[in-house]
Length: 87
Image (tube, rainbow, N blue to C red; front, side, top):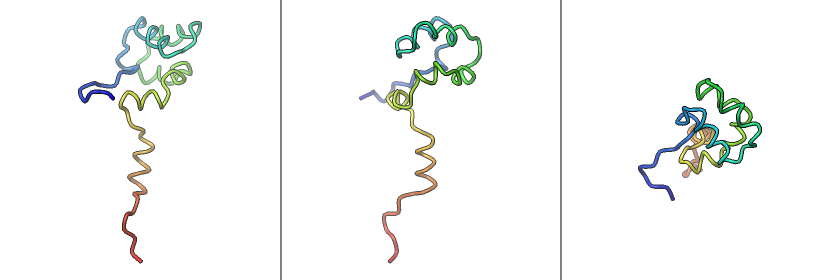
């Protein structure tokens, strides 16, 4: 279990190409394709749409880092579970 003070780490914190390359390799991205994402000077939003990054940063990994699914939160807010139904 992660401590309360730990912050999620992701592509936004990987500002330098070397950090992007090393972290994508740690996440299991293919070595020959990592340089396409790591050498880009585009911002985190644009880099997040590259296929290599999307495959490395899976939803499971993001949840393990402490991030919650916006889709799940929206569904829970839009369709709340009614505990008491009138009969």
